Amino acid sequence: MTESLFSAKPSQEINKIGDYFSGEFLDKIPVAVYSCDASGNLTAFNQASVALWGRTPEIGKEKWSGAFKIFNHNGLVLSPERSPMAKALKEKRALIEEIIIEKANGIKCHVLSHPSPLFSSTGEIIGAVDTLIDLTEKNASEEKHAMLAAIIESSDDAIISKTLEGKITSWNAAAEYMFGYKEHEVLGKHISILIPKSRLQEEDTIITNIKNGTKVDHFETIRITKSGREIAISLTVSPIKNSRGVIIGASKIARDISVQVAAQEQLQLYNSELEKMNSYKDEFIGMASHELKTPLTSVSLYLQMLARSLSDEANKKFVIRSVNQINKLSGLISDLLDVSKVQSGKLILRPDHFDLVELIDDVVEILQETNRTHTIVFEKELAGAGTIYADKHRVEQVLINLLNNAIKYSPKADRVIVKLSTTADRVRVEVKDFGIGVPIEQQQRIFDRFYRIEELGPAYSGLGIGLYLSSEIVSRHGGKLWVESALGAGSTFIFEFPFALTIQ
Ligand code: ADP
Image 1 (tube, rainbow, N blue to C red):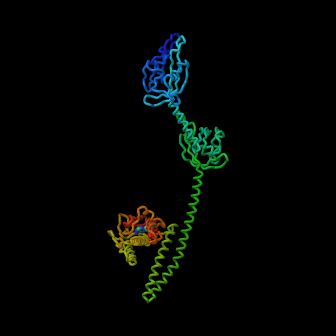
Image 2: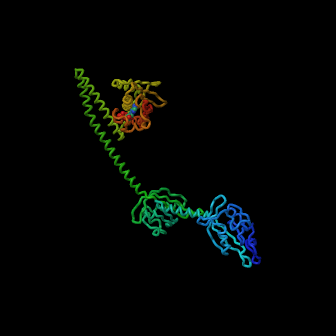
Image 3: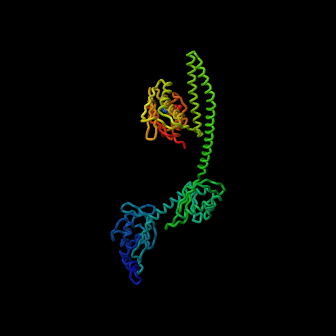
């Protein structure tokens, strides 16, 4: 049946183009096919032609093509009488030519035109049939292919493909540069030529992963070049699937990371050097402060004895001032010694039961004696007694440090408040001043060792270790120390810890 529609039976006489085709038959063909009579008048076309042209031409009224506009493959306009169909009719021969068809909506598509003349039973030309094959998709896929090939060739990473058996099937320019082999030297060779003997089992693991469809991502390893040099690379291996989804090989992307690896090793070396120097420094500070403290303690004792023996009040005052200065110096040295103890993990806590209210009272009294500029106000919000289990000497150290700072960093104020309160299981101490404040961005860093706010300049002396030690002592008690402040608006340093210290 099909045959009768498509072509005339050998016995049938063919006199005109209409004897060849029926419209219904043409519509069943999935590619664009149309016909013209010997003078070029359009006689038939199928739905695929309508789709390709983007319009429905009028039979008998249009000649050679139903397209809105045609161009040759270089993009020059082709008048219908110079179209491939017109040429085939004129020259009475079949031909193949690439043309560009522009649809009514302006979309252009590349088309392969195959006009072929048809003859009557008596051998006279009665028309021609043209098959139009849309090349747009094919061209796009060729372009994509060419683009991908160019990307692979210009990549700085070595891109290699191999079969599941490990045979190399492609090798880009970067692979040539990285491993030293030319493409023709490695195609068909086993990938193990790049793998050091001690790492050959890596390939089995990679292939097992690939066979299971799993990608190997950024695997850092060593490979060897043609000259035997080892290079550090980061490897990504992905399965290659055919159009049916079957894994047929693997693509390997290798990035040379020798520079990063060398830099990392160098950094590690510097870091361990730095750690060593740091521990020498801490050891030295520890030793020096210990050695300095002993004679200072003796000088302080002798001066106190001298003060007691002096009857002249003016001289006595000078000696007492000297004792106070020596005590300050001794405090600084103790802090330095504590820093080195913290660093070496030797800051031992000696907890005991004591009344925190009493301790704060004592500290306030002592500091108030030596500080005439500020009044230290003690506020307590306690229901019962303030007995806690902690290292009394260290808690006192924290309080003294926070109160001294509150006075030192509020030169224009005349008041400092220390407040004691409790929560369900914790004590909370707040030291509030009305001084220069701490900018938000530095509120974390002031608890670092030797950190001081630079902008303050030399007006405020200090070593930058008081808060570091205080925060260390509080956290060793299972608590925390922090600051709430704003520049110019004063600061509140707060610490909280459990009623009872548990020593692990
Ligand atoms: P020091 O006071 O010896 O410099 P600290 O460790 O006690 O060292 O404090 C670190 C830094 O934190 C200080 O240099 C200062 O810049 C800032 N600081 C501490 N307490 C206060 C405060 N109450 N108000 C404003 N700034 C403070």
